[in-house]
Image (cartoon, rainbow over all chains, first blue to last red; front, side, top):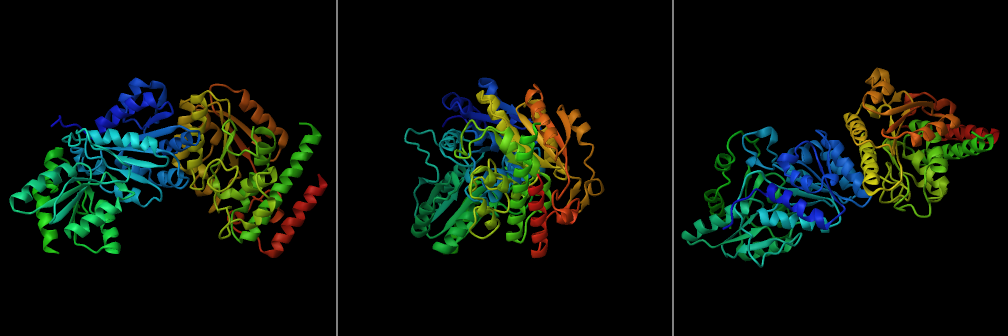
Length: 313
Length: 278
């Protein structure tokens, strides 16, 4: 297995890589280029990188203006400020006119670590899901993060890309890996239960699958990198074929992937769904890996939720 | 300014004001006060200043305008209609179910609207992005945006002011429609954002103060803005809210209220008389 890498690292590298191919790609940052890794792009293309200072609201609208003239702006900052502080700018100046702006949101979730609750954005998926026409991508590793950037460039319309600070294992470094916007990926088959995971929780779900196998439980694992639009077909098929669902995400259990899956299944194929995520609480300071355990984003907990979902059948 | 040109602009501005009253009356809602105050500025922009083509509203080298004070959409719609972007008759459908003339500007549906706006403070930043795009691509188009004086209470206005100055956007012109009133009363009583000129100068802007209803001063200001290099230009346009309709002038109560039938007839008669007198 390749070395662990943070998706934000891949994001920065991908911007620099695709900056050469797409001359209309521009990058905006809000005094965090070092942390969001857009400084990688800045070094390669200093004339197409614009620091907006600590003024995220203005940055989102500047991005909107650039996009009306044919540029593809990536507006970068922490997820908290991109989706939270600048929510209304994203909604009204990017979402409502359906402009071709890409929001590169890094430091999502609790793996921000020591900075604590004020910077650990757990609600961004829920917030962005409410904006009509918004695409939301939450890649599961560095390979997928790179693919997500290119897919976002080639998709006309607003895209929210969610990246993490913590290095996570690479799980998609295989020759047949293919990223299709809006299409989930079945990572492993199973019959008793399906774990539908996104972001860093995909790798955790694969480990949980091994734990469950030792107990004779066969778990399917699906990677939903595009949370909106949701791949309804792969979710409905999993519900039909395994009869129990666990959703796993490094985000609030309210309104995120778990919400999206539950909304779909309650209307089209009622199926037990157990949601694993952050349980309607704020995060805390601490080393990221310790927080992952503290908040139960572990293979053991995914396995426990899987058994709980099976019990509801 | 030549007298003939000034008379023509005044007549057009009267037509724009008639369109505003028509739109707001038929909608039974909307914002006549700030629409009437900015009508002369918009008339000058679309009939004199801007390099545009009503037959090709998406022409990529056109000058752009963003109505950051988006609630005064009747002024923008009436100006665009009178300029030939769409039928003047359609102004009567403003705010109606099924009409493309939404309550606040919608770039997706209205020919000539360069940006959707309405949530205050945002359009100015979008205009900064457009001006930056022109610089980046080496194009010579210019970008104009109108902000309300009350709107300048939004923090984002000052984020944008910093940005435009930092990136030397001398192809950007900010117009502050300074009518002194906002919904709750005088701007100086509600939340005093003055002095705009000193603040903007401190932010690194070239600042010009004019009478918003004097076409000679409007023309001189836009010419000066065009010639000024290295800094963005702000035109502080001292206006009268409700300008042109006697009972609406300088009344905060006419910020967001439609005239009743009797008031509509009076307003129309006054504007028609004004037009005839030019």
